[in-house]
Amino acid sequence: MAILSVDLAYRRWRDLGLVILEHSRPSATANAQAVPGTPVAEAEAASGPIRCEIISMDEPGTVDANILAGRINHLCGIRGIRIIMLDGPQAWKSVNNGLEHARVSERRLNTAAKTGLPGMVKPVTYRAFAEFCVDVYDGLCRRGWRRLETHVQPCSQGERVLVESYPHAAWRSLGLKPLPSKARAGASEIEEALAALRTVVPITVNGQPNHDQLQAIVGGLPGLALEENDADGAQIVGFPPRREEGHWREGFIVLPVAPNRAPRLKWLS
Image (cartoon, rainbow, N blue to C red; front, side, top):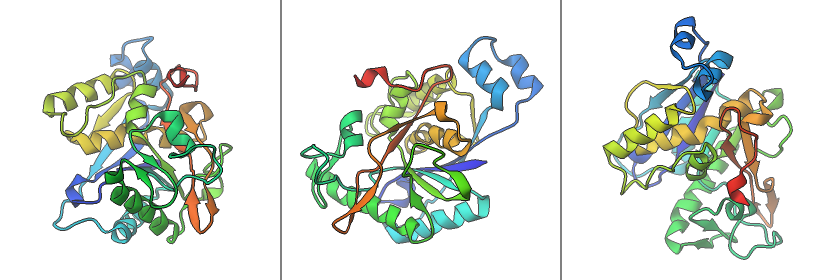
């Protein structure tokens, strides 16, 4: 089964990173070429490489949250996708989470930006993006999706589930150096990061990914584990989402786990 991963952007459609990820069947040729004993070889032997299909939405104008939700929902309906990974905050912080300016998931992962109480963010320039992201989640929920709300069989009974990703932490959870910011990552940095990712996870891509698409790829990896109910393939961080005073609060951030690694993040402690 395939999953969709989206690196969200709200200014221009071409800044969106959309990638469909799915496991392909292992082939004898691929397994023969893999180096025995390496994580990539063992992953390929188990389920085959991960195919990454880049989806383009390059058009004029700014991104509308509800229109984007509709297009994503339509794409997932056509492709039979029931898990969407979204790189962007799904909710605001709970009043009683013990933190002043962040959700629990954000504090544990030390995210660069924080969503506080509704309408309050750090840094302040993050507000428009945060509100846009919450609107995208809400737009998808109006179309029958739901936010991930449990660690146990999160995608049972054929439900369609929204999962928050965080690519910067995803790179680190795989034991890799995070991709530099978009302003600092040229073509060579993107190529190097993709090559490094391929030493840990067997992936194929239907083209050369740009910065947003590569972030969508690494951020989307745990979605495959959730789809397959692989408890060891994803690290779920934070508190479950809930409604509080008319707003969604908290919510999990989910990260990948490298092959043959215990599903825990030592660098968090």
